[in-house]
Image 1 (cartoon, one colour):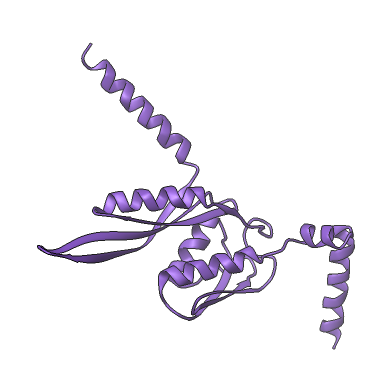
Image 2 (tube, helix red, strand yellow; image 1 turned 90 degrees about the horizontal axis):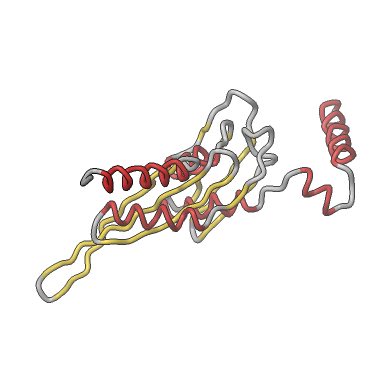
Length: 191
């Protein structure tokens, strides 16, 4: 009888993990910060975490606490609250090249053909892996601060447009829009 509540707790915990298992999270950066007080220094930890479902949704969060696991948990919760959806071409790459910036951090993202893989640095790579992008070429310019790079990457992804959304804005059919694009590509190849 004494073991029954423990089993129930385990089941509840297991159920929560199953619900959250649709998301993958990546710890990008941990920073130790110190507060100087009368008796010496008080240390705390700041964590930057990226969470995504690998199907086009991702978000990032920042958490601070006296212990590392608590900071990571807070950052993960913040990231889940800040999920954004990104339109992907064929579920593997971007629709078009795009530039993003935040503060002094600038990033340039390019769509890539199948088999290219993720060619990107640390914080950007984590964003693409959690987002589910398989082929992309990215370059980080300016600040190498992970917070600025992640925010600049999300800024670039926010400006990503799918052909469906462009066609809707211009009151066209998607097929008409894409046939015009293929015609322009053929003209460039002929030149």
